[in-house]
Length: 375
Image (cartoon, rainbow, N blue to C red; front, side, top):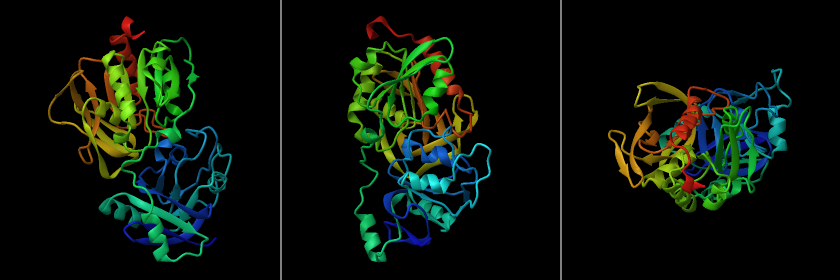
């Protein structure tokens, strides 16, 4: 074990010890407030190009297993913890976390004050960061390297995380609907949640054409989570507008929520430090019900939260807002089958307050059946 350094682009440096793979890595520094679910975080494509700081101090207690992976690889650019567990204690564990991080070639750092780092990012905002371990390099050189890295604003990342070929997750039990799911960085739990409800899910590349979507005769289109700046997704936004024009039901989550919002004419903007974790409170403006939800987003929609709005596709409204900062967390077209939320209804590793949204997608597809012209 050797000294390691976490270097922010504003010049602040945290000194710790090497952990996982030694070397160097770069990304956007973000903090994740969940006390559990680190394996789902590591395998979530939405964290691509991000160095994740875990605010919970003790990480690795339950090891890792193949069942809880949300994709085929670890996507984080780096992993920052205070006190990694020195042993694994869980009957489902198949491997030590650090050993898996090494195999996945994830550079990490341990032993730094993650509370102080989180407060710094909260006050100054998410920023570029580098982790350096086992290297002969000066502090000045580390800061220079970090400042050479690309910003998350303007990042076009879907091409790196999306499937290149369509695959099908069959319905469990009797098939009720067919859904085209655009893979913008989808998690494995998402099509599984739909298949458990009798939906045959065709997970399609993010750059699929309208013709390829219509070829499977979908009852609905799903827009997944994913990384990057939604403002860069011009082709996907135009595709969503084509789907809206055909009045095919749409359900978007996370990145997909932002893309639907932009398709409706709203702008997106970069949040100071974003929402990441499994303990984010949102309120349903229609019912007053509060949900504890799972988030991972650094961008948000500019949409009116105090009144209805009009679009070329009909009237709409903001349905959910964050109780922490008032950010738009959900919207819908009130006379057409299109809605979205900024969080994860599949919520691996929980909570499950928002799982009902998949049932709502079914209700929307029943209410707005595919028209003949959409065949």
